[in-house]
Image (cartoon, rainbow, N blue to C red):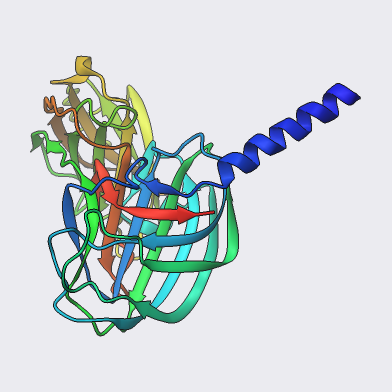
Length: 336
């Protein structure tokens, strides 16, 4: 009993020690300036997805951002309405619909409130302090098993000239070719991207989205390494991808659309030049609906910089479909 109690107390002390330290996302940038800026506009949603801090155990109490080193604001201090949500996801799948990226856990840590935005004009040290700070109304317990996700909504701000610090390395995009049309207007996009070895755990991916499908219908994506090119009388489109694997894409909107999904895998140079045939399908009472087929190739990328992280942004209120970038993120600090 004594040994068990000692072990538990030692583990708790270790966990408390880890949790007492603030940390940045992406990891290790507390005293290092990011390599580029990102525009800090209001009436926007910003979302970071970060696997670099997996293994960290923390009770997170604050969130903070800093200005980019070389870009002074065009206005002084101001105020802005802010809403902050923190959660977790499995980064093997990322969505341009930012609401789908909280697949494991989601907590509203700061309900909408008007807060101060500091003056980011004039000279600044490099890196700047994390002085745009949001204290949580609800602490967030992070056990480090999944990628950490944060989503910040900024509204009604008067200062539109600020720029966040960001550390990011861009991906490269492979080639894609449409092989045939689908059933009616049912179509899919597909392309492969690579960040290179700098993004070790999630550096290669397939990106796909759906348009023109049936409303509120589940759609999956069939993957193959050869073109079947079968014209069967009971199919309304040519069958190209006899499935080697099937990926669930999601459920279409009322307009028959599914915003982009990104299936990430670890970087592996052996996958350079990989060719995939893809085709979307949906099982309906009337039969099997098919998109057209696509032939996509993985591009070679030898870039050694980057982070196992990404971010999404979009205009607030229009929809939840954003622009997704893998390879780094806006630099933030989580306080404990």
